[in-house]
Length: 266
Picture (cartoon, helix red, strand yellow):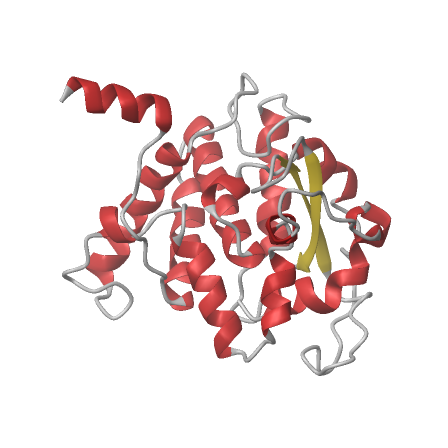
């Protein structure tokens, strides 16, 4: 009814419990987005590239949909070249391996994270390319490029030409349309009876996928917790806990044994 529709417009829409996808389905999704973008007019292609970048970031960073939209464009641009010339160790997943020189990309999120008071940065150093072939650096560099074409160099990473942050709903529409194509292509990737609109979306699907991959790779539970370390604020029961120097850009590499490994197994 009209009252419920008005409430939804003001509060956002509630999704049913979203399900994870296989990593093969996500790799195919990103490939399709890229292929379609390269065939479209510039203004359409830019939107597709943004959606692909959002998916890659959500998986690699184990982010919920609202957290993806906290990507800060100006900080991303300033630090995009850090880690570009890294060298992959022979056995990057071995405990104690020095990952400080591994190929990585610094992801700066700016926002009011769950349980926090005020605005602050959350910094992650993630693998440039994952074990399944998700090219996070490529997508972040493409995002910078398309935002530059819109004359946007600061503000939200995922936004419009006028600087307004994009909405999860519009990204979900694009994601679900491509997933429907995959469903028609290959029922092994997405079941024929799956309701794509209900089961999959930016809000939870890619976070759940990342968590499942981390468990399958037998990463320790503290690795997963550190990937979402704003939970520490909830554990502090309203008091702002002390974070160490990893909160600063220059020391983001200090946590690469956690953040890089977590993203690399995706």
